[in-house]
Image 1 (cartoon, helix red, strand yellow):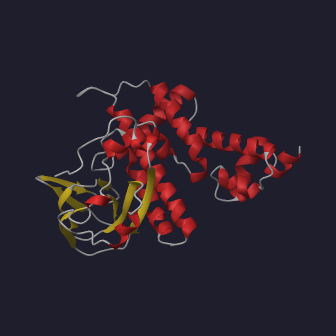
Image 2 (cartoon, rainbow, N blue to C red; image 1 turned 30 degrees about the horizontal axis):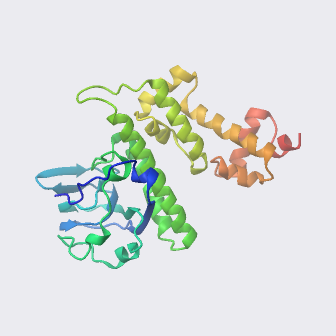
Image 3 (cartoon, rainbow, N blue to C red; image 1 turned 90 degrees about the horizontal axis):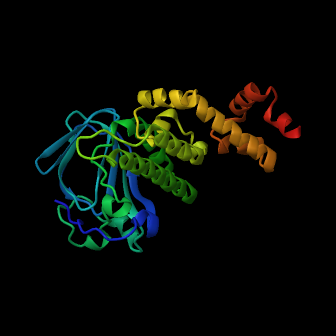
Length: 303
């Protein structure tokens, strides 16, 4: 049962409206056998199931969520049950995507009611209303590793309760959603029963555009492949054929090229530049930089 089927006309809310991903509750503790019955939420629920599997039942349909897989419950959907017979560690995030001046109320409302009575004014728009695309319940296979890798740190960051931590966690959530929406849009550009018809070059260029904007976040090859809407093995084959290098080599080149630009045109420290291009330390950054230039970043800058 879905209560928010009316979709607005015009551009996506994510592009032309009060778009503001905002987490109001999140956690990631382990549980023994557990089950939640009959509830409907006015906001989104994103979950990755660590250390065990889960089951989601909506209407007559049942989904099994294996270990390290994830799912998204959309607002206004009546969920018959969610749970794990043998226990799991669900890493979960309750969040809004559309700004609501009364959104702080979400943190004080009991979330397990089977109706939206008293909460209808907090109901978030559907994924189709926001992004112009219907997001499936299960996170696609091409994105599972990325979500499993990034959701746990995101929740830990948000639970720090410092304003800048929560700001960064919301930003990380917005990035995950953007990659999923891009992936889903690529996969939906086909007629029923057909294969994706987007040219490989188009997919690669779009993935490279995303990669350039995400270097500081430790953008991985899995995320690179997801941005192209391809599985990692397929993406690696296509990328190698079109660019004559591996995706990993390409990301390394992007990082070092951006580092060169920052070293030559800014007064940022070597440590700041290392972080901005996705290296965990100046030691790692220096090693890769020297392998390309034969000197350290500091000496290269002096020249």
